[in-house]
Length: 382
Ligand SMILES: C[S@@+](CC[C@H](N)C(=O)[O-])C[C@H]1O[C@@H](n2cnc3c(N)ncnc32)[C@H](O)[C@@H]1O
Ligand code: SF4
Image 1 (cartoon, rainbow, N blue to C red):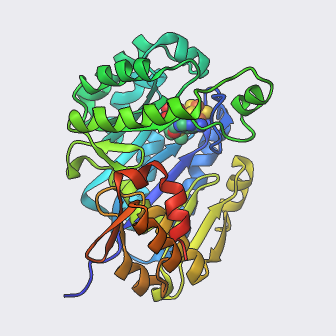
Image 2 (cartoon, protein in one colour):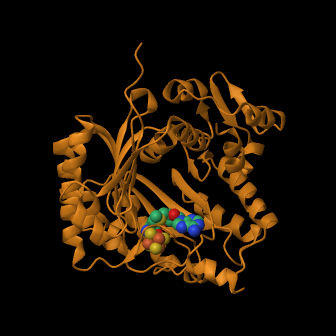
């Protein structure tokens, strides 16, 4: 039996936000203004360029991320989807997802009409004081109303929450998460607050004006998250992502963790195509600044493209694959795609510490290993 063809996804980065949140280090810019139409034209030109490089392969998923792609107009979304369909074809039942801010709830019907079939809604917190501290432009009531609107319009829906926030105790997180779990959603993304270098939160922390919970409290909140979500039937299937069933997983995010192929257009988008076994894995990075991206896309040169070394590809496949909680990393596939095994000393140590287990060709983090997921995966990298 020949192996299943590698899936191909499309990521579109919309870099504009109504305002910039103090914790965020994504490639974001305040307000699109007059650039919005030019950026859409650039996205379409960029799609033409990538079709010439990938050849005909149906798209398994399309994801509009950001930034705040819920600021795109339905016509802009439709233009991208129409071009993608004409160039590659969109596989039947493909996931077409978009990251939305609650503030744009009034435009959700238009987004659904344009073809979005999965929404991830940036709720972040359920109380007004936390939302204000996170610099959000919505309150808790607005988030719940947006959620209600989204539930009526999108068959597939997830919300993002940030925990281990300043002033949050394990008890208050347990109460907040229990409220969310009672809503009966099928997918949740639960992120521990990271103080990213260069953000406003990092500057506040340096000056002693922001004190996130200590390591012990953060570890307790992580443990509570696993216990409460598992008890509610939404266990983690990836470090920060929880779903009720396999069908509820994010198809698009799985492409990253499984090491499939994806084209990434829009300012700062990172794509991956191919493998060492098929002549090399391309790593693509689009120009960061919208003006540069727009200027370069017209000539088909909006991206820096390099071929990863087989070792770098293997490292990336280990770091991403180990994030999948149930399946872990397929060691046979790693070897046949890149020629590399995981590091033998790192493997022996992780096995002796009970941080990973073997299941046939697969290497899977244990609950104990998941707490130190990044460090364990780093030690396994060849
Ligand atoms: C690219 S953001 C976009 C979503 C959308 N613009 C919004 O803010 O709702 C994706 C998610 O990453 C999470 N996130 C961003 N920065 C984070 C940080 N420093 N720590 C933890 N989670 C973060 C947030 O939950 C956010 O919803
Ligand atoms: S968290 Fe979302 S809305 Fe806030 S700056 Fe980042 S991408 Fe924009």
